[in-house]
Amino acid sequence: MDAHAVPRAAAAVDLRWLLSVAAGAVSALLLLLLAASPAAPFHHLRPASLFLAPSRRALPPLFVESTLSSSSATPATPPPSLPPPPPRFAYLISGSAGDAPMLRRCLLALYHPRNSYILHLDAQAPDSDRADLATFVAAHPVLSAAANVRVILKANLVTYRGPTMVTTTLHAAAAFLWGRGAGRGADWDWFINLSASDYPLVTQDDLMHVFSKLPRDLNFIDHTSDIGWKAFARAMPMIVDPGLYMKTKGELFWIPERRSLPTAFKLFTGSAWMVLSRPFVEYLIWGWDNLPRTVLMYYANFISSPEGYFHTVACNADAFKNTTVNSDLHFISWDNPPMQHPHYLAAGDWDRMLASDAPFARKFRRDEPVLDRIDADVLSRRPGMVAPGAWCGAAAAVAAAGGGNSSSSSASDVDPCAAAVAGRGESETALLLRPGPGAERLQRLVTWLLSEQNFRPRQCKVAEAN
Image 1 (tube, rainbow, N blue to C red):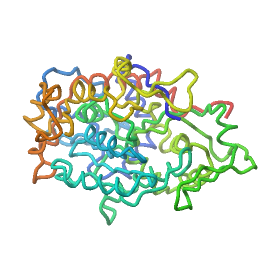
Image 2 (cartoon, rainbow, N blue to C red; image 1 turned 90 degrees about the vertical axis):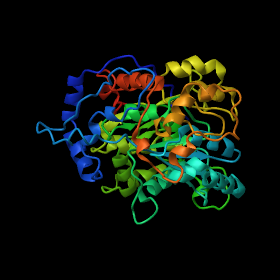
Image 3 (cartoon, rainbow, N blue to C red; image 1 turned 180 degrees about the vertical axis):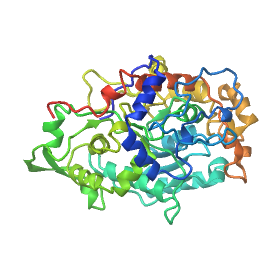
Image 4 (cartoon, rainbow, N blue to C red; image 1 turned 180 degrees about the horizontal axis):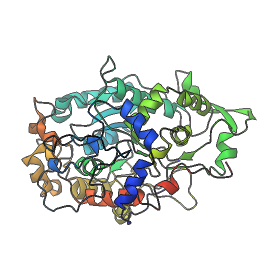
């Protein structure tokens, strides 16, 4: 089951409180400094305003404008002439049979040359879909230039509500860490898992601009230990996922015996959609204290394990339980009480989607007309082309000024961003950002999530009943 809809952000953050929060997380941040790449320590917390491209409207100051310190001894920061680059995101976009067109559209809407992307169509989709997807990426003038999109050709079996969904997510995470071999993974800061039925409500410039102000150890995971009915219906039953050992897809089957709730760790549950920091992803893959592997073995027999595995590891690990932000950053429309699946979003949900301030929304049907409105009014994206950003230079400014609303544009037109990367891969223009109204909305949401009344009080809180 997906997560609950994201509440609208409203409150402001007291910087003094943020400093006290950072001071209270000494052990977690020291571990991050040991695990982070040489380019990561501390300077990533400095404002990235020097990378802002000219915008049609000035944005107000963000809520974190100074370096956060984990101790009284403030570490040295890089000179002002060397501001940190904007953060990078590693996206897993997954789908099944019939999802290839939506997966391509989602990729184009999310594309930025600084990011990394893995596309996975599970084994239920025909091999021809994966081959066509790989051909599309290789032939696209923008996607191929930066060489930052990978299609998984040897597909995994993914069983609905089974642990194979977790193994596919971990597969992508490990691939991002490994990169193209020899352990030289791509340079990225946050891992984001999406499905082909997800779609962005902000540009990548908006997302990078807001996240450039955040400590890069934060993990956005909707979670609770108050598992309620899930204790009896999901934690106690024993199931086997045939996708773990069969070559063809099959249904879960159930074992008559039931088990008690674990006492070695506390169970947490929540949304299957997350934004995970690189240090936490490294911990999941390396598992140096064995907790991630132990919990993974437990969740191999757990129904809908993607809604619990990552949450349980994060909230039982001393190094990461203070880094969780209780949100999946999605707008999702539910029944009350929630059913197994959320509503499909349509034009009637437009106002609520934007009012949520969330950067992502789900679920959308293929070719849902409201997606065209998101492309035109939010992303300035023309059909069949990538969403333009400041990295496109002048071409992006033209598109933002009305190119996305052009009724004469078609998929056969020349992509205005192609010239920005052709033959050069990632250029210096990729460091530029042009945040817009989406950045203001996302700023409101993150400010609300990190407010004194929401951040610590909703962070890995253990319910008495569990």
